[in-house]
Length: 144
Image (cartoon, rainbow, N blue to C red; front, side, top):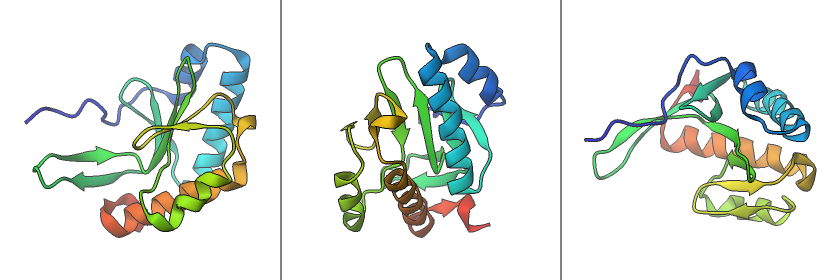
């Protein structure tokens, strides 16, 4: 079985943001997301893999037998857009996307250009819904 690439590391989060964020706006938005996600999750930021800032963790196991750990919520300040890892697949949370603002999405990731493009209160609801979903469906650090 392949080893997971996205595992928790000891890289300093602030050092990563300072080195990786390619402009002042992305850097400011990154530090604001760290403040918000720390408050919403109750967990300090940790680096996951080389580019993801994650908060808390949960253990997943698929029917195929593949399993691992991942952050409860997180983000990456990628060059083209922020990748927000805050999505819950529960149907009752779909309405939150309607109020989020300007974003693009793939299967499990939300992309935003800048924090001012979205409604932060809706992002908070989405983060909390995601944590609640993971708490219910996985072994989760949020149970502590």
